[in-house]
Amino acid sequence: MKKIFILLLLFLFCLSFTVKADDYMPSIEFTCPITEASIGDTFNVTITLHSQREFIGFKFNTITFLPAGILHVKKLTLGPFWKGYTDSFILYPPNIGTIDNSSGQIRNSQCSILPDSPDDTNLTPPDVILLNITFLAVDSGTVTITSSDSRLYYADATTGDHTINSIQITIPSSDNGGDNGGNNNPPPPPPPPPPPSDSDGDGISDENDICPGHDDNIDTDNDGIPDGCDDTPEGDNDPPDDPPDTNDTEPDPPTPEPLKAIIKFDNKVYKVGDFIKFSGKESTGDIIIWYWEFGDGVSTDSKLLKGEAHHNYQSPGNYTVRLTIEDTEGKFSMTTVNVTVKPLPSQESSKDVEKNSIIEESPFLGIIFVIAVIVFFLTFVYLRRKGKL
Image (cartoon, rainbow, N blue to C red; front, side):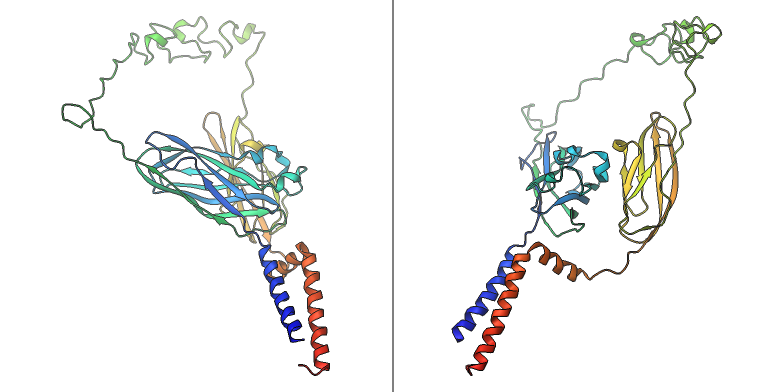
């Protein structure tokens, strides 16, 4: 009977090992087809997620390419995984990131989708390309590319641990030496071309002059024809073939509305984790950029969503949300609103949540464990009654 007892202990040990073996650690991988480049070369670095869990989003607080000054980011794009989702299923509006070549960093790159997307089958691909980065080599040296501050979001509203790698790219120093009579200095640059001629002195070359002999910069009626060549210099803003407004069949367009930022949202008390929809669509002017700052260190450019932004807060408090808009002339307007976020009710400890999650995801292993405990107990009672223990 002692052998049976030992076999049961070995069975329980193997069972606990099997549970741990089922754990899977997602990983984020930086890859590049090359390890060495020359000054002036461009190359791509791909950031890929390898995961078997239902994945819905990511956030890189910082992506570093250090030491700074060797590489410059020329282009930063999201991977093809995100292209199939509409605006209504975007949890974090895509913020590809803020590039700071002087410090060798890309900050606040993030994107997430709602887990109730109509195309949930795309939530569990084994390999997801998160970002593509195009670098330009501007100086010599060896650069390490990685991220030490990243986060993954899953469909069960949790974040999980993951591994992340780093890669190194080497740019050798260029050799300016050569056969220049024993002198390694580069040849002098060619002399600059002579300035273009400007016979009327208006700052516009004769080749591009609209009204030769007159100042092209003086246009009283802003019709695109300098006054020196305008038959109606005091006329309206219509095209040259359109008469002034006194005999006009095509009056001037109305004056555009002034640039003014306006924020609309459901002004109520929210709780931690609630999604809040902010709208800047009622802002006036010829707007090309809506830039949101949510007061918790997160910001985003909602150019793709035409003035709308969605955000949730992870901590209670009072937050000031700022909207800055920019028009086609480079002018800005800014406004703010206040948002109150209350804490959630008391919740189970993280250990209980993790334990329940394991039981829910692996009910078959839980049943085996219970059966093993019962068999162990009955064997112990039987041996005790027989006087063998």
